[in-house]
Length: 295
Image (cartoon, rainbow, N blue to C red; front, top):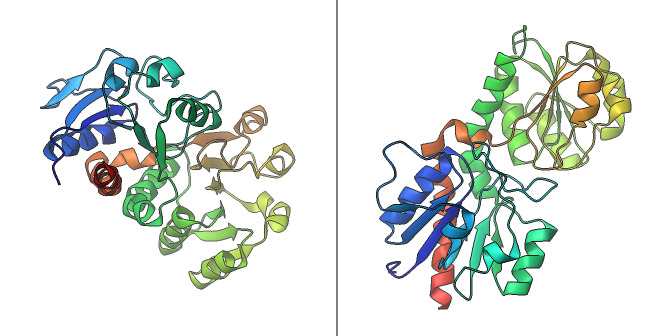
């Protein structure tokens, strides 16, 4: 399938988007980009736009980052000096009918796209892509833990809240490293899988009983489950690591007010941008080809 007449805009993101842009060029597309770290030598075949609107101008397909959109509607772009919040005017420059491929969209973006006839293609919860980038996310979380604690992972008491695709990978890894892993999940099948992997499984209602003994708490559910009352139960040395999409699992503001160290470890896939960028491209390219087949 020829991509030669397809214009793709890569907007926001981190170093993974560099590799995604290169993949799009290799596929034959015309590529415009803005909002992710730009290498000093540039990216061959990619136009470096002045701003997001310039990148989207004339694009058939836009690629937005997989990490979730913030509460104020900004795309994930940790190195961009200005927040990138999609507006109707910004998106109106795309060719009709436009398509946006991204992790997931908020109400603001959905409203603009509906008004402009732009189709959204969300892939944040695709299990195959989550598994492909999962090892890099796990390595990133381990890095955060090691850099922010004065104890070893081995023999530490760790509570994982949530046992989806990434949560289960973290459980297997932390158990293998010798941690005392406690998994709190609502789904009984997930709890049983955690038990089979060597962790102690808990219901969410049992958390208050175990939190006072925890050294590290990791949240992986994109829903606020750990509030001030529960955080008060943790020892002062406890490290909180939230790997979930907005709004996150942990009330990080409350944690800070209580003197606890809380890190929102978003974009952990950026730890290995070439590997993860290529794995994300495998899912993106399938969607692009599906779009092109409909033309």
